[in-house]
Length: 110
Length: 399
Image 1: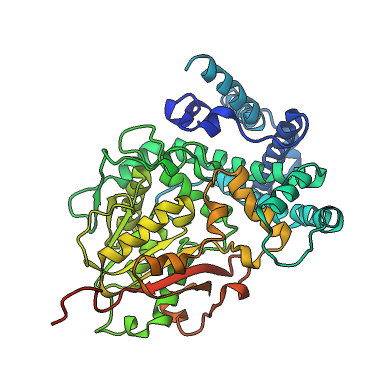
Image 2: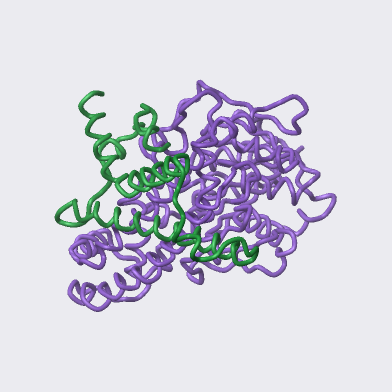
């Protein structure tokens, strides 16, 4: 995972990563919020595309009906997999903050 | 680019398509908003015209500072970073989940057609060690394990979204464009007797352009150099996968290890803007040295020339140098490459814009090479400088 990679020494090879990216709004939080909103849009688009794939495949092959989705209860393995998906999405949306935190940690313990 | 080496799942492909949509929106719609503010409000305020005239350094910095106060321009600046950062993150994650398999797939093995010669002692030039080009964390060179290919794989896998599919599925239109130019300018290169026997590609990275030469000049011995070991390892794996023969070397193009007069053709593709003023001079001197008398050289660069830019386009281009870890970008947009080639000893140096070719051999007769002032700041053309080494070397004893 890229998040883990950020702890590698080589990831911090240059001053650019060490000093953080340029900021343009008066409050750098604005820059970060924009990054997060856009990453969230990415998650939604990818999810929507996946759902579209599933719907089209189901329609083509006549495998299930719409009501089946509403009645579905995940088994423990499915629930675990879904939990990983959620955690991955959270990490991606907030990666700009994760990087900031990793950077501070790195600066504190070179 | 299609590599046949990197696996992508459904969501990874969807993420790439999302970045392309985002990148397009930022670089067209959001950029148009910034342009509007620039031409309607800021340029009149600063007393700068809207024509395609190179601004003075003072004017350009004044425009930059004033535009940095405009909210729409700020959105554009941030979003230029955001789409690029997302791309690096998405592709980085995809490469990381399969890195051991990629490393294994690229390892040299007995029976390979080409070779890979690395030099772990090679000292990185400062213009590479001090920056992460295109703000890609780790730049071209970071290594996270033995026989690492990570940075090369990330570069290869992100090229489509980065350049909005404008360099072809194999990311080789730059190579094809230089080939079209060379065959158009010197048609004898397309004949059996005039065909190049040894070709050298400088700053080859993962070999996307290099492989175009291997295909279009099947009789030639192809060599390519770069300073990045992870890129060269990936390049070797890619060439073997494609069944093409290339000899990759980890060398600095400023100090090549090849003998004098040992090549018929020396080329580069978007290498020079990642170097420095003194490096460009050194590289052109090395091109002159390793070429045989009568040999040809050509260097393709990003189509960003100050001669063809509106004031806003000078900001757009300046973005790369000011905010995106491309410290030599802006100087190169004004550099007289043909003049430097002449100083390095070349004859007939010419620079201009070459229309983008998709098949260098087929397109040689139809794609146009126009003067700099007739170029456009888009990937429908590439800035290009070509020259030929005099058939008789100055000072040589010609009997």
